[in-house]
Length: 336
Image (cartoon, rainbow, N blue to C red; front, top):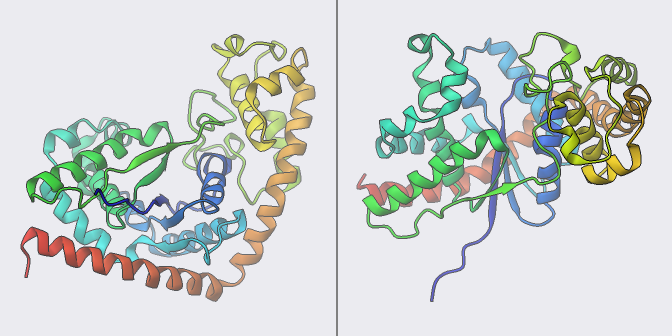
């Protein structure tokens, strides 16, 4: 009889300073829902962060700020394991083993490396090139069965699946690593920049008006939504009429997600309205949802010891799982 796998969710967020609306709607809000249904492990992926140079003091601060964001958004460290990646050595150990399992051709197909390295690939860090193997290690170290992913991470999850399968085959260890399945959020597409509907919302974009930060004030949100790029046409009635209107599509998607509604219902309620009027409704919805989170983040950031204690408790739980799984992995590989 085939053994039934325990369902385990793993995901991580890079500590890149202030979390923004894209992190919230694209990942963390979904994390909160998942912890009610499944065993969840959520990681501040600080090892991934250093694929490009980080000032140590800023990285330290960002790890704690991201942890505060997790808790403020509703992640419960009593229900889910919350920790920072570098505190569990198994991530790095398994990543090296996977460096030796994965093939160079697989790495060469990773589109995110090409995008992040840009024209000067020779000057990119080796870590940036092989970090998909570390991502696979993050997932498989805990034998995770499900991973919440957006469109931009599907390729990396496919690689993790390939690595798991190859490891199992290479070492004649059928089903040692589960083949993780994607959990794709259906309610919203990627949250895009408020200044360019074709670019993902990102902290790296120069203009702060391109994003809603989770610690923005009500006035900040109103100003940013008022200045958000749209077109001159009114809100359409049909989904197909949004195809060539990226900025309009982005704002309507954000509103739908914040109000827990479908895009079809939003269009039904809003069609014919000018965006100047719609933006008032969007601002109100964002302020009601985001400002209480921002207040909690600010309060949590004042208690550094509490955040460190939370990470330590999560790290202890993660290390216990990691240690046992790495013991088995080393035995399978042939290490003494």
